[in-house]
Length: 347
Image (cartoon, rainbow, N blue to C red; front, side, top):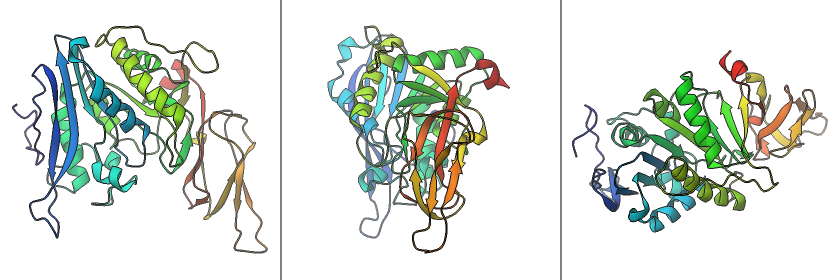
């Protein structure tokens, strides 16, 4: 298959995305090291194609300590019947495989967060090389991208899909409809602290529908997160007509659909003002009020130093709650989301 951009990738791909049927193999990303000068890192990739229809790209393991996505995508990759597909599903269950095997957010190869390396560089670090291939050689095939994340070891998330605010109304509505079809309790439209070099931003720049997820955290496998991830993938495929069926968006509490939320205001983020031991008040999904305590920062190594109370600055629902007990100055300890309002979001 001819390359889809001028700069040639150093990663080899055995999969011809244009051929019908199930195609499975390993991307080979070169990694010269002390014990293997011509060594490669193998990354599983699967394509299932049949007939005419849209292409859904499913990615997991962008961060290595986020487990629900790789589990759900791997299950689908083993069981998806090409005869039941109208279109194409490209699945990469564990893209950042060095980080996945190392159980870390950052790659142990170059100590980089790949999700701050896009659109990448084929001659850059290992993470930049991976980012370049995904953006330039895989993503252009897609009509919709579903990038499965959790909060890893850094936070605990309310079970949710997420998306950026997209100015193009038609794409925004398609994206929100796709997120609603996925069927988590919340869909959060957010403006992040540092989003310009993320995979989501690359998808959006190409005019492709892009949703992500936050399906757990605190360094564990979330039982409900895995269930929602697996159901949500099928729901998206049904919504886009790739497989037959109607999405099931029923929630555990009996509500019939996803609740659209937003994180529009920088004041929705609460940061630790010093190094210390953070005692949170709330868990993800709880309602909070502006001025109420998010928690207290303790200095247990200092007998006479009083704790610092950190307050929420906005009413809303906790999207991200504190993960590790010990925090560093500048760490986020809580993120509050509000009900989605399209007019406010556009402002």
